[in-house]
Image 1 (cartoon, one colour):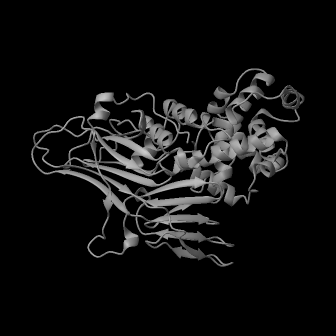
Image 2 (cartoon, rainbow, N blue to C red):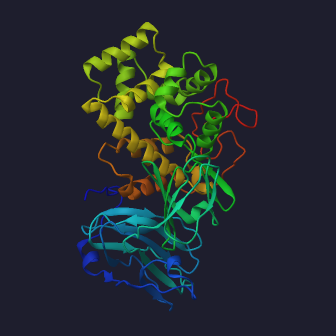
Image 3 (tube, rainbow, N blue to C red):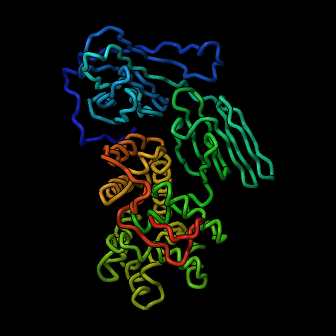
Length: 451
């Protein structure tokens, strides 16, 4: 099984691996009489309740391929330095440094092989830190799940503590979770949204769902794929949560078509859609990404969207369309992506899979910006470059299920602590520094939003 490693972080030494303390998994009993469905299936646990200070301690667990695991390091309310997960060769494959009240987590890790994995919790050495623990929660093979079917009406479906396969069917359907979004891991996998609770064995698969409500706060899925495809086509990166929501609202308001191909076709005669597309194509960020003459411009789009150079015939077709005025530069990125999604040639089918995989990874990345701090950190050219690098690694062979580590690494890269964040400043939470102005498309609150 192929998986990515985080090569920027140092590997474990042979001595560290040899001296690692192996934590055996034990059955995980119910919480105070709670049902079995409200827990993980097993736990590997180490606890220290004395005053012994630990530094760079290494632990190991034996995991099973394709099973999911969550890791938690507790440092007696003192910030953990960094919790890192390593493969059997000592390479870093996941990292977390949330530094929230001493609790550091790596959530919803799917083991790419059966065998040993190593963990370093990075506990603080403060003499006042008298309690340390590390817990690895393991999930057994996922049961088939309880099937929940919606109706043709607009359904409001309440998620329970069971593993559920929830299909909303027709209508505009909402699935409701009682806890905030940060308590769940969301993964877009094709037509499915997979939701895993952080500390209980509750894994749901959602299809045909237009909205998820977390503790009263809605997350809209309508037009998610189309909006993310615009960000990928014009910026090569995932959307920020606020910008994504803004564009979804605008697409809903104008009754826009659902596919990139139909959206590109309406560009020439629908002023609202033309204004929306122009706001992307004429933005400073897109202009910086795509420069030069028409051939250079088209070549850059192909490399950014499809990870390849255009065929000579394709380069000639698209560049001549731009030079003749049949295609504007503002609409070129969308048109090329739309062409890739509808092309039925052998190469076209591969390109379509690449685009679909990029939408999955971009969506999962945006879902993971589930706190004010993480959303605010996704701002500026360095953050955009990190997200762009993540999507550049996605190919037609990528499976988002095994992208947890690189997505986490990209988010950790952009989530370095800041001195302060002013959410009312021009560079608002989750917005890139090189803002784009939406030309002629007012946002819901009546003013022209920016990204």
